[in-house]
Image (tube, rainbow, N blue to C red; front, side, top):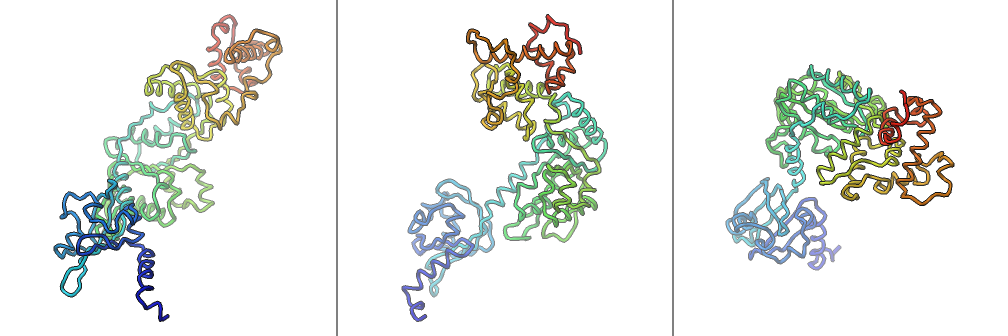
Length: 473
């Protein structure tokens, strides 16, 4: 114990302590050189200690002049700042925002250096700015929803009825089914269309920040807090969409329930309530009753939100919409990529009708976009352009269009391109099934495990031969 009080032992102990604490510490000496720079400050400013120690402040940070550096102000003028917010740039050009205590160090009456003790709020500032940018214009309307199936038409009809009131709406649907598209369409079809539409994914923010972002803060509520309106205030008169509502903690769900019922909110750190006029559209990816059972969603909040409850169907339940969706996405990316891709191959179309689409319409769009990144200027999308996880699920030797190949196509013939051969196989087999059912498209589609619209799509592709037959529906 005697040794630990001696000078050789104290220096490394001090350095270990400085590196262990959860605030940044930066000390400069009388000449303005950095002499102490702890691990936390290194993390906050994203600079290695060797880039800072023994360097002049003006060489480390992108200050216009010495007056912008609070450490140099403390050293040269004896200035003291406490709990002062500062935004500056390191020598890499990275923006850093901190709350600082900055003050001179004295030996007797002489200033021998200066110290800055910093707490990082860079992430808070960035999330606040991103939240402000989320105050977006709702660009989607019901006529932008692609689909002609009876199922999607029924859902659109229910959503249109919801535009007439200000009641809360709960949109339930798997990831990628288009919940935000429906939310924006409801907003744009309502009397609130001229007011703000704000969308916030509740799962995208840490628990420590979401409350302030939703309800706002007042200056001094916590270190670094500023006077900032929350999303409820920003959406006043309009619509607030809360995505993945079940990701909020139980206390926050209780506070949200109160805000909806009382039509008031209270900013963090404030003592007064503020009136709000906001329509809530909430979304959930899971069955809400299952979320209630798993204690992820409060039952009372569910009842409050589901005044209007709309279930958006997954793509696997409306596969008859595949052709029109595919055409829409091909047209979209033809325009964006300056291509002239005509279509998907029959083999790909057949595969798409067998696939279960866990990512729904979003997955279909991404698959089309990905394929068109691999394609030549004007060729159709074929099996080789599909992502590996799909090709693994449907190996080429087992794709549906190769099942039950009629024997006459397996006899010795001149070799033809695979696409041509596959077209002949599919066309011949479809003709075979149609003949069994005396040309009845509905019955043939049922046996082929296709929707009637999907089979008609194929018949159009084979119209040169199909027109020679008298098909009846």
